Image (cartoon, rainbow, N blue to C red; front, top):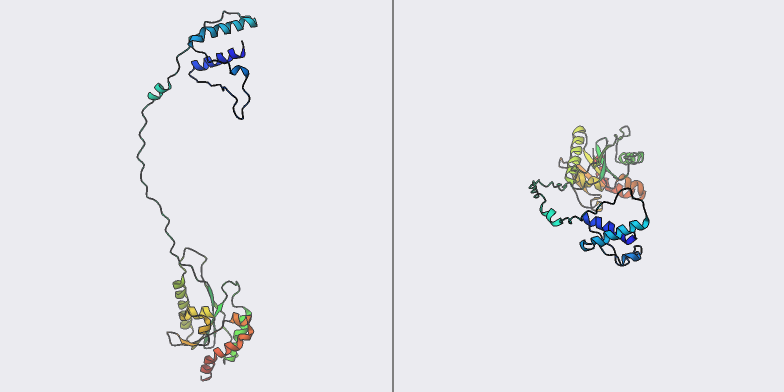
Length: 276
């Protein structure tokens, strides 16, 4: 059987099964070159069925293959499958269920205000309350250098030598590492005022307050002006206690040449203490 006859045989069976087959008539990009017999190949049809069978029979005789049983009669080609009819016989489509509307979950917009950052140290010596502003970004608190400098300042103000500085009571803000809690300016002001009130209630002997640094002046007095404007000025707390504002201990440690400037700022406290 020639190669063309074999292809016709294959296409005939494919056609009987309802499968359409195709052969390229020319070379395709990226594909192997077509065989020479493809150009003369003809798809078998009903009119060519007898000639095709004869060609098959002749090719079998030429090969002289012994056959133990007579060749079966060719089966008539079956009608091609009507795809459109099969599609028309498909069961009716099941109607889609009506989707249930579900409430859309929305993420509530956070209204938490950015927390201010500051660190205050509350220190007592005799009848003087000192509130010092510490750098909030530095992990160390009220160091021995801060303590030594403040001891010298308060001694110069007239504090008795046998009365030492108290331990520093720290108030860092924000107090908790949380972005979901409200630690905004209003909450910070309440915390500072609560700390101040509790300190004054626990130490009735306090008669004067020294605020050192901008953060202390801002959160104790509620003043929003820069430190240059507040420095050296005298204020009063709602309770009537006199208050003086000057540079922070950290600033004086960093720039010792400003100690004379701070000494001039605290003269009202010195004069008040001298009159006791």
